[in-house]
Image (cartoon, rainbow, N blue to C red; front, top):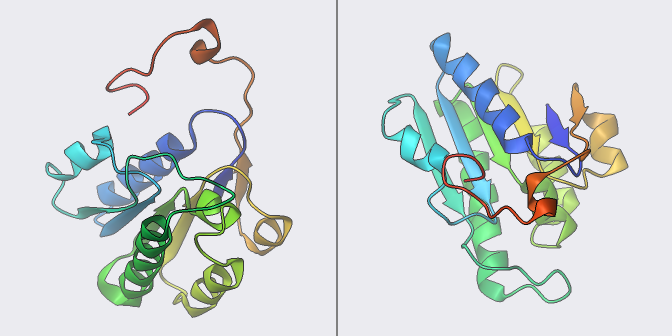
Length: 165
């Protein structure tokens, strides 16, 4: 399942999918690429025993043209964690912002496709982030594009705890 597009709500949709799966007794792992801040989903994970949330990024700007080695290393560690997670410990694995990590060159698209090819049939994957490639869209079973129609940031409203993070 892929949630992509320029609008707000891709991670929120993935969290909703995770909550739905948890409600049916699934074990869920969410790996957040390129995110290090104390997002609400990290805080909520402590209250949900079958939800594991892992950070594979820092709360720093990633330079698209020249990513820092630490950002590349964290993304590669996150991908390796995802590889282990699909090995049987989890029923649903969410790779939040993986599309952006690929787009920024932190992870090669071929590495992501190799992970997709390794995924056992009974494990579900959710991939989020802007810029899902045409090949990823083609390979996905489900794709939702979140459109940016209007956003309060355009009016100067600052990001709010519990709403944007």
